[in-house]
Amino acid sequence: MSDVHINIVSKFYPAIERAGQHLAISDLKLTLKSNEFICLLGPSGCGKTTLLNIVAGLDNDYEGEIFAGLKSVLPKIGYIFQNPRLLPWRTVRENIDLVLGAQSSTAVVDSLLEVMQLTHFQHVYPERLSLGMSRRVAIIRAFAVDPDILLMDEPFVSLDAPTARQVRELLLTLWSERPHTVLFVTHDLREAIVLADRLIFLSAAPMSFISEIKVPIARAERHNESAIEAFRWQLLNDYPLIKTLL
Amino acid sequence: MSLLVFIAVWQALAVYFASHTLPTPVIVSTVFWQSCVTGELPFHLGATLLRLVVSFSIAMLLGCALGIVLGRNKKLDAFFDNWLVIFLNVPALVTIILCYVWFGLIESAAILAVVLNKLPNVIVTIREGTRALDQDLLDMAKCYNLSKRDTLVHVIWPQLHPFVMGATRSGLALIWKIILVVELLGRSNGMGYQLHLFFQLFDVASILAYTIAFVAIIQLIELIILKPLDKKSLQWRR
Image (cartoon, rainbow over all chains, first blue to last red):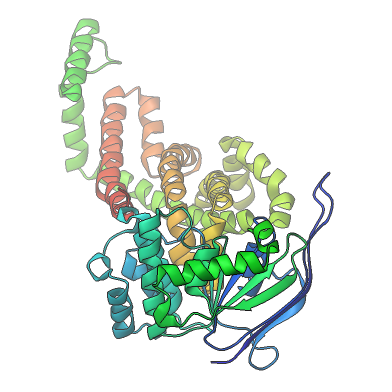
């Protein structure tokens, strides 16, 4: 899999009635290395969802370019939205099969369902699932298409702490089995440290790059609460600015 | 039960008034049976049903297609909006007469008149449904590169289903009424033609007998076609 290059010169929201034109993103350049897990951190309303929508090809009204590997090749996207966005009239399995289309592989879907512990729920309609389970289905759907880049927009928000932790651990299990390039948006510094290879801090609107920090904790150590907490304190001490960003 | 009470009241009233214009249920059912045996009622009912199926299918297909297009395309919608309101409000009788005058007293003119009366209704209903589509799900379909066909069949259509069922039910009711007028004015078979004949003969028993056949057909359509459709497409709901 190839590197993904994101270069957004500017993104404006046009003026609507009395609200003037709004500059949402200004001069943002990111290069995501193959299979790298990146967490984006920034104040709420800074345009993180806008950024993900641009990368996903849902918003083409911007100046800049996004490509995977060679120029002008659009990356294949797997998007895990803030709400799961499953089709309520299709079962779990049918939801996953739909995005796979003709290339649907029973074995792949089976193993994804198994890792996410949803094998017994594959023929259930989404309305009967808990929010945590729906999120897991959305994660499977995104991995199933084998994307160049996985976009995750605060996928664990509004889950209670134990459920969020469980889904987070399942995500890491899945990701270590099938590594993909991930762009993960969050407010939660601790969550970001547990998940990411690299943290990227973004400014309030107009959003631009502030700094990036590699997480030095080995993957095997990520379940070690005190190591995570120690690094979080170190970060907050070394960069007091971070507090203002979260 | 309510049916039995209804028949009892009808019988009582008919006996009380003892009038030619209000025959008893017994007389009506005899007439009903006789016209079934002679094949007269099935023939005319069949003619009307055939027109219903043809005009209903055309109106629904065209209406759904145009409704989705107008609901998704603001410019086209603005352009056609006024025309839609006009066609929605032109009296059925006007379209029927104009169709007959322009195209002659032929079958296709009759069908066209029915379709023109029904079409704006379907378009407006489906357009409202299309405007209410969930943008989140459409975005999901787009970023997962679903084909146009898959998006239409699996993402858009299920959301339109309640609107389509609404258009179907109100449409059937409307089309029945219009077809009868169309037949009355310019066809030599069908329920409308027969009712016109009975009116001239003051044959109330036959009119009621045909009405019964008509109500029975409506119930059958609801029971055999519409209810199962509802059930099948709503099974995912809690």
